[in-house]
Amino acid sequence: MRTHRARATHGPYDAVIVGGGHNGLVAAAYLARAGRSVLVLERLGHTGGAAVSTRPFPGVDARLSRYSYLVSLLPRKIVQDLGLSVRLRPRTVSSYTPTERDGRPTGLLVGGGEERTRAGFARLTGSDREWRAWRRFYGMTGHVARRVFPTLTRPLPSREELRRRVDDENAWRMLFEEPIGRAIEEFFADDLVRGVVLTDALIGTFADAHDTSLAQNRCFLYHVIGGGTGAWDVPVGGMGAPTDALADAVRAAGARIATGHEVLRVASDGRDAEVAYRTPDGAEATVAARYVLVNASPHALAALTGDAPPEPAEGAQLKVNMLLTRLPRLRDSAVDPREAFAGTFHIAEGYGQLAAAHAQAAAGELPAAPPSEIYCHSLTDPTILGPDLAARGHHTLTLFGLHTPARLFARDNDAVREELLTSTLAQLDAHLAEPLAGCLATDAEGRPCIEAKTPLDLERDLRLPGGNIFHRPLSWPYATEGTGRWGVETPHANVLLCGAGAVRGGGVSGVPGHNAAMAVLERHRG
Image 1 (cartoon, helix red, strand yellow):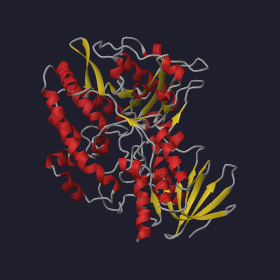
Image 2 (cartoon, helix red, strand yellow):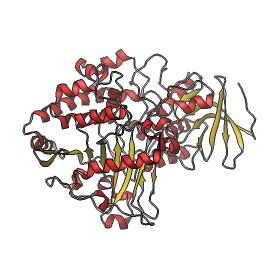
Image 3 (tube, rainbow, N blue to C red):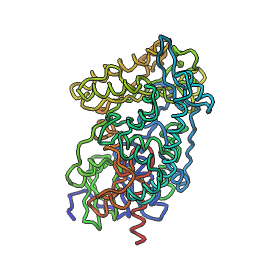
Image 4 (cartoon, rainbow, N blue to C red):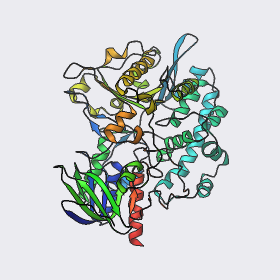
């Protein structure tokens, strides 16, 4: 095993976790509860990674989920196993999508019960056809969710094993073998309804509905299987609440968390490992470990071990956080803004609009009508607001923009960010009865409470490769050549990948952390 000059060598630990994001904390908690000695080394001054709550606006008592913001893929098993005090609330409305038809403002409201949803489809389309198709389509995805989701915390099934488990050849063909655009076009006729369905295939994924790589299918799959239902819930207290609970569980189990400690190198001979890191005072130290679990991207893992890096990754999203003094009124006066913004508020996300935006971005241009979606955390969970803000009717808005790959920002990140933000908000304003700017709160210095993050900002702030929120393209939830038994294995026998770039990673799930811990414990038992 190669060694490096260091100030001191500590340990050995049974496991050193590189990175204190939610997946690393899950792995640490499982291993410590199993009696293993565990050290977590985190570069930043706090744990949580991208799943944190912060006060981004000076002098304003609002704790926003600055990066990750909703929870779907976190298995109940992990919450129960680790005794986590985590509260998740369902959203009363699934989505609202405004549009204009025959010269009048209208839209599609999904949620509030079956009859309200049925009436919403009839109001938009004039018949029950699309509603019946909606029920059939999501009945199919619900069946797949119930079959696939429980496998995420078990050893990887083979492709054929998962196919037999799904036990629906039409569903398998539509989701696993053909571009998702075919299924959407087969089920639905209305352009707006098609677009609402397609958006789940494009969150953080730059692809067309008919992309032959099926990257959009993999993204869609992870967005509809969470909890076996596909529901996306609001974390009470903001996204930092679940990760704070995880950090508490780690410490309670006897593991040590060291923040402000940046890992520099990982050396391994397959049996023993050594981790070199920089302390807060700038000195270099090393720690010995039997296992090293890396809660970072595959690119960071390769840099730490000296291995060849994987293919470059690229993010494709705009994240905007806002605080409002009130929710804006809608042009579609038949819908209450408190319902419209409680779920996912789709903007410029018709099927044709999404295709046009992708084509423009692929040609190196910003989309003329940038697609995005918004939700209001504080409608479901007002605890993130200080008592005074809540009493005065303030609300948060979180916007997630699609089809804005990192390459578009390379020429001038600041200028392109501002241009994109302006055009994105203009698309929203087109459906409002008053400009959003008039509803924005101001911070202690009199500036509007709005911040935007591009893929390049996320790469700088969080070291996400290319700003990719999944660290790399999402994988199928079954074994392929080289994936290993749990999907966390690396070329080094005692170095495991427990971040979002692991097989079955992505989203706030804890699944890679769980699976890396299970791989370690399984080997110990063996």
